[in-house]
Amino acid sequence: MRYRKFGATDLEVSEIGFGAWAIGGPGRLGPNETGWGDTDDAVSLRTLEACLDYGINFIDTSDAYGNGHSEELVAQAFKGKRHQVVICTKGGNRTMPDGTWKKDFSPEWIRSACEASLKRLQTD
Image (cartoon, rainbow, N blue to C red; front, side, top):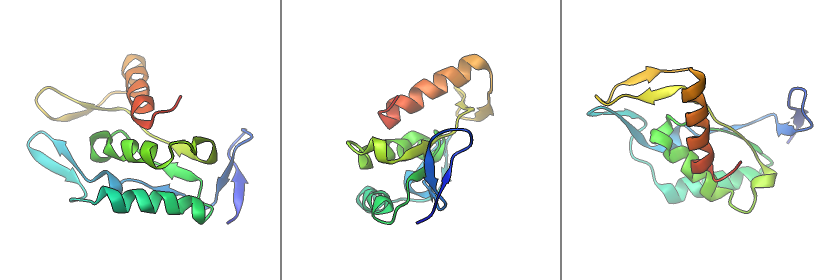
């Protein structure tokens, strides 16, 4: 695997990353399922663990993938190995009381979304 410097940081990331959208399984937007259909968490965890075997250390996820389930699986797969991976997540998706989504990039919401993602990812 080849690696590149990540921006102006000292981090080295694999040229190939793992996109974790599908492992999140179905999400909910009101009464409707969104995203991918059912997934098998055991298969997803084995796939994430195989990333390290193949030198993939860049993992892309989001709070929207399976309503946060993707982030939870990433945390589970890399527990005790967090120093070996660079995790990228995204935010700005807000579920409203009526079940719809709204984009919200206000400082308050982004702060809240980051804290929730860090908790699901079990990292700081």
